[in-house]
Image (tube, one colour):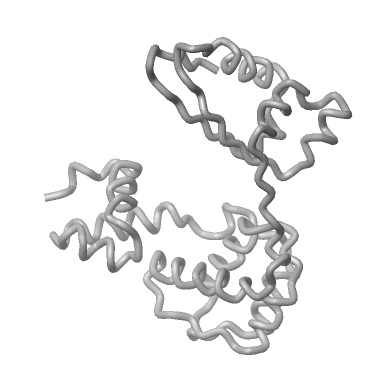
Length: 212
């Protein structure tokens, strides 16, 4: 970790799945906080899919770092804790990937919705996102049936490499729309994103020079 704290400046550090952080990096992260003192502030936002308290008890996570992280502890419930929201969450993911892959909106049969709402979703939102992407890729007639969603849910867990290349699709779509000389507002509306997200994607895919 190399993150010098400059006088008068604040920093925010986001770490996803901090339970996988090796102990030597846990030590460096803790030293970063303790050495900042009055010269600046470091705000750490971390997520964990594991019970860090159990990892501390087993000697796999530093107790002092755990105590620092737990000053503001937010527990996000499992997807199935609010099953009434599963319909809306999956529907929004389908709409997003339909825009990304330039597909017409998909109609979901009642039997498929029941399957989606009854599924346990042990892999969380990330797994639901992967299933929704795969559903859009495989759907050819514009209808998601109970049989097709069951095959996705109970087949092999979809790996990222098998799900298509959503980043490449976004980049390709952006390049095509930029070449059409459309306005920023029009492009953002058509892709269903904000102007801020549009600018971030242009920078991410290094296609800013293509803008006329």
